[in-house]
Length: 258
Image (cartoon, rainbow, N blue to C red):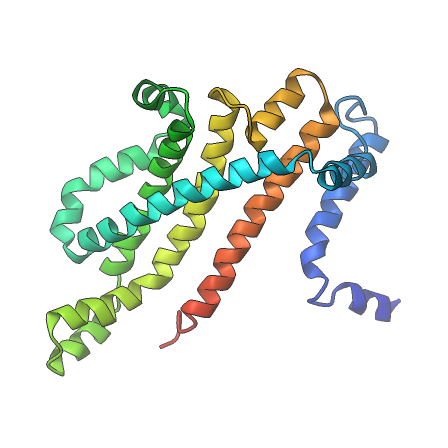
């Protein structure tokens, strides 16, 4: 018994504990008749349906459309948010002058701005990408700026005492110090970009995408397809976050070290 417990609690298997508990709770809800099977199919049937749509290729065009929109929006967010955040972070006065606007729009749900973006871009893919990029860019900008402003003052002072030019202090100390916080922003931004794209696909005219697939399945009461699409969306978000986490560990391995 002790050997089995050690085997199950081995660090290698710990990431599987959460999904196992989710499936167990899912099955418990059905077994206890808390939810009717017509509204929540058994996990085995849902996973079997999920495997089926993946094998048939029916879901791949929607997955590709959502991933393409998410990465396009994220790319725009990085191109705008990182340089602007670094410039604002390098000047505390400049950041304070626009801090209200950044916090105001960062606190405003992006879904509330969908009508505004529809007026500007119409019912197009550009609309979905633009509103997603807007929400993600604010997160990137905020974290990039704070990463620069919170760079360790001792390292900056040491570089200046040694006669390092202001440009090299900015490039080799400030930017490198800010990377850890910037990557936190990038991880949050890619997740936010995916969320906004899914919401936009649900409520803005769309013929492809996981959001469109989810809302379409809900409207025709195809609950297995709805839940399988939700699971695919969650898996996509997890994999995007995991990719940035691995990149962060590889590229800024010095983070947290003295």
